[in-house]
Image (tube, rainbow, N blue to C red; front, side, top):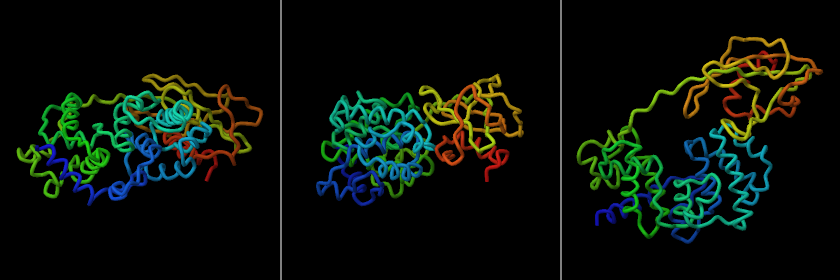
Length: 352
């Protein structure tokens, strides 16, 4: 069968060309009987959601040094985990990370379930992540569908229907291609193939291990696939961000609500984010306007926050948030948006 030939070619290529990643068991080691750690597979998959491998590597190594097992992570303080996650983005992942770790410990004795159906019952684990853990950690033949694999499937089988409407067709192709033997290595091989050879632009078809079986290459349309429906233009929201410092150097911060963007993260107080925001300073002060604007882009909109800065006395009480003394204030624990605000306002605050 064509699928069996393709699968064999992909695995042969992977055995010789697998990427070395800190959460991965090399194919040779796996064939020698070394099993992946489900905790590390799960953690890497959560971190890799909408984030590049290059950005995740350092965070993964840091997290697994601080919390080397799911039991360790489950026992960690929320603020510590959120602080170490700062800068990685999509902060709901960090909240769900803790919920999931605690559910694994409380409901499964510290051992991850082995099937997609059971994994889907855990917080923060959706269809893709469940399939990835079941396949990579437990060698179950679950088709794993990330952006790389969707691209490989669309080209291999010349699927011209645009994403996202073509997702069911691409998954059906992936299911037929997934072997009963070594399905975890097969999934990672497809990821690597998409990341290194079958790339979005200028795919290296000449060195692809399955070029003879690629329908899109035969038709001369590989570089045009996958087709995608036009994206809607992102709206822009506006607002204000407030940097207040006491005479002793303490900085005003608040913990954002658990639900919503930057949920549970330390942040400078802000106004609402909308088309017509209303100023909402967290305390009475002579707020300065340094004519600076923080710009940031989220998944669904662009954000522009006008900066306001104030130096206040020790007697001032904020309506929300608390003053954090200077030696306990860690800009690195702030999400990227708030670090941008700090970098813009640090000169006015007198921070070097």
